[in-house]
Length: 290
Image 1 (cartoon, rainbow, N blue to C red):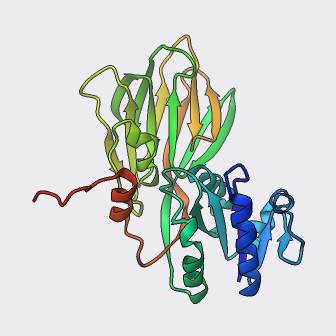
Image 2 (cartoon, rainbow, N blue to C red):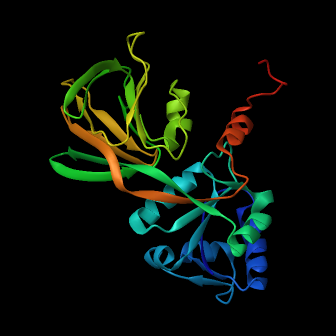
Image 3 (cartoon, one colour):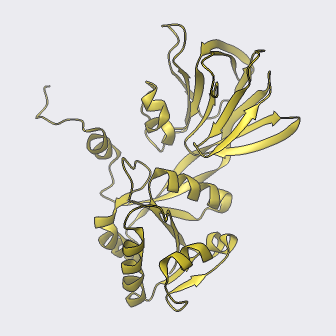
């Protein structure tokens, strides 16, 4: 098996964790691939880890092992794009909803990978189309697209249509358009609903709206959302997965819909999303009342 490695080198203990894993992988006759930057960071010879380009890392790897946190997983998802190369996340960060396993689980889970006892979970991606400074742009989001007021204290007016029909106009700090995967990220902090990752749906969630009745909404994944910033004397910003930021011109229209591909995530038989919720969000501490 050819296994790619993608890691956040700023995470504590990532070097020692990966160096130990590389030794284990060599005994298992695994072929490991990495970028030049990661290879230099690990200080391992070429017999253990082969240096490849980012394009080759994606095309030649059967699975890419992603070490870091949710931000690292989002960066890896942007890297693999439409390639259908599967990702296996190892959480070295904080909450870690996207990273499937902990560092302590790495070796038993990799044994399961080698024996083929794993599953592939497909996660919906959002396609984002808009113009900025007269240049058309197309971006993709695994988690969310956030429209916000930038560094000012002013509210923005956001007009929303669904499938060409008027939906609502929000006077708010901004808006989150999220996937089911992104439902446990920024949208959750802004009072949005939690969706099962395998679902195909889109969350429309205003941030601190200036109306108590403006609540988050969930629409089918095959619908198209059109968002327009109404005229104002301040520019708004658009952020994709917390990693790509674009300044929007006044009255920029943004179109969002389900992308024509999914991100493939490696999961295991004992992976139960409800268990993850209880663990990560510290639900159900007592026996419960029924």
